[in-house]
Image (cartoon, rainbow, N blue to C red; front, side, top):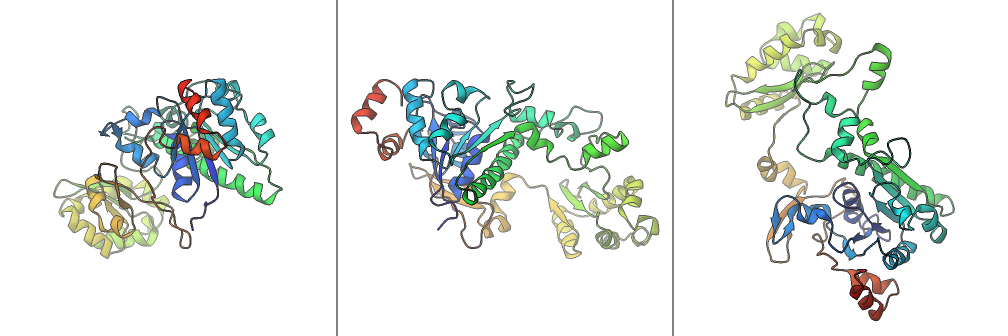
Amino acid sequence: MKPLQGVKVIEMGQLIAGPFAGKFFADFGAEVIKIEPPEGDPLRRWRKLHEGTSLWWHVQNRGKQSVTLNLRSEAGQQVARRLIREADVLIENFRPGALEKWGLGYDRLAAENPGLVMLRLSGFGQDGPYRDQTGFGSVGESMGGLRYVTGTPGEAPVRPNISIGDALASLHGVIGTMMALHHRNMNQGKGQVVDVALYEAVFNMMEGALPEYAMYGENREREGTAMSGIAPTNTYLTRDRQYIVIGGNGDSIFKRLMSLIGRDDLGNDPSLADNAGRVVRVKELDLAIGEWTARHSVDEAVALLTGAQVPNGKIFSMADIARDPQYVARGMIRDILLKDGTALKVPGVIPKLSGTPGDVDAIGPDLGEHTDAVLGRHGFDAEEIARFRAEKVV
């Protein structure tokens, strides 16, 4: 039995943040009913396609049921309210105020379902002066501080080639929703709203950057491949022109690293015994480590560093990940069959629970694949469903 079996989730999210949160619930056994507009979630057509459907779609929406519903129509709103009446969780990532305009605000929904937990994911949250601004994950990364510290000194900030801002907001949303469900179960069944702003989720990852600025007026800046205030930790070039990350910033680890590279003079230097001293001489340390890596292939360096118990890692491409024995051993590379019989590799399930693990049960659904079945379970008869279809409600 999965840990969220018996939990019913209605997902009204599109693209990234809302659906990523819904995926977690589906992986761990919740019934996730994804409400899509009749034309479908735009993610169905993003990036690489197979038979007209995005491969990303099958990662982001696996294990869900798809119901098409025109939420801009009064009949569609009535159908949605009936579905939500029996739900534990509603996930939405529309612009603030959209659901209220459609008669689907929390107060109205909670009047019929007091135990409802509503996860609201948006660029800037449900209040404040920026509430009505459009906010994508890229904007959250920028205004949350992440982009400012990412890149090479003196050059334009760079972005990771994934939607990390949306993912961070989703993870915070799932955590908040689970806390709200726990509170509901311990307090007479009363639900609540979980309000997650993308920029705040990113800002929450910014470590001590704010107090450092507030107390010392010091902005954390871009450091390229290094990290300011921690040494030595960097990316180094090997003999075969590959890169390896080495983290020698623990006191005992630093001594082992210096011994390995033949620099006991540095490892035994009292001024380098702690991080504060090493930060002052970080360029000297990086040069010594880089001279050592330049004499070894990346595989040789990995083997030697691992043997010395110094944290290290190659820079993995997706090709490296797909064949790596650690990923395979822990079930992080899964094969699922698409409807045409094609095997598709997808990420496995995380976190790993020892007693009630999650699993990948189904590929992403076809558009509206479960409309009739879901509406039928919620009291709509075949004649009503046919009328909805004729009127383009579903």
